[in-house]
Length: 356
Image (cartoon, rainbow, N blue to C red; front, side, top):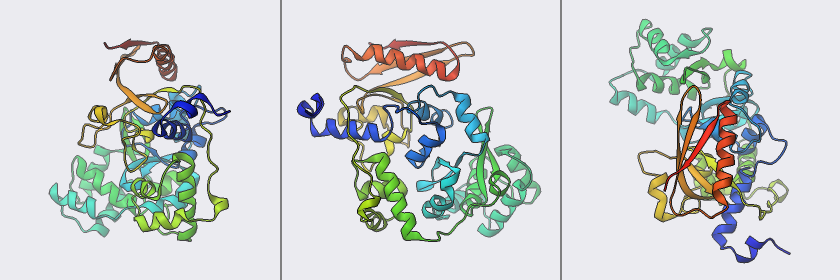
């Protein structure tokens, strides 16, 4: 007999539950940092404070130190991936995924001109690579100082876009964070060699992309893959038609309720072309207010039912949840468990307040 939700829930309810499970938000046993990053294929990582919490939402008993250790061990790498956005990618997936989804330099070149930096792209790439080679991870200001000494003056975001130009050529990735700020490192120093910039077998890479995307996002369609990856729709459709044996088996949704506190920019909030299933229209502006901002969400069975925020001190964490509507009677206790787990993740006591 099918579970109760399958008998009484709407189609949207079923899709949300299936997607939440495909995204590992039910926290299956046996997965660690690398396994979850590989399953998700690439984890949104433009916000330093958010991506560790995205992993916490999916891995039981994970700690912030575990995420840091995996990055220091070069098992997962923060770099520019799908759509030219910073992601965490497993090191073993970089050789085929990075060259497949790397973006054109036009956006960075345009932004550099707007910031008053006129530089030949090839020369800029050479200078960035030379500034980083053999230096270990450098902060943005340190990289800027070395570039200035080489005759390429840049400040602020211009330094980032110069690093992006070199990253596109497989020469730069991000190193460990330092005092909550990004660092930049030569890919050959960090990973042993530069990242490849061409795909040996594009059709095989596209099939792998579609297979892995579907495993972490089904139910989904080719347009979702195109939106997520930044690849043309034609490429996504061709990949989608891969051999039947390469397609993931459907995941059975369960009737057990899943309540999770996911951070801003979480993959579940961004992984498809449209967002009305994860965040229903009446409340969408509270999670997606515009300007590229994606706020943290309280999810109940894959549906955003509120936002949340933290106030962290060296001694404790205060978590405030703001529901969109009155929460079901059984949800607050589970939210409290999530808050306790959030504190455990950071090694601090945590207290929940549900705003009225």
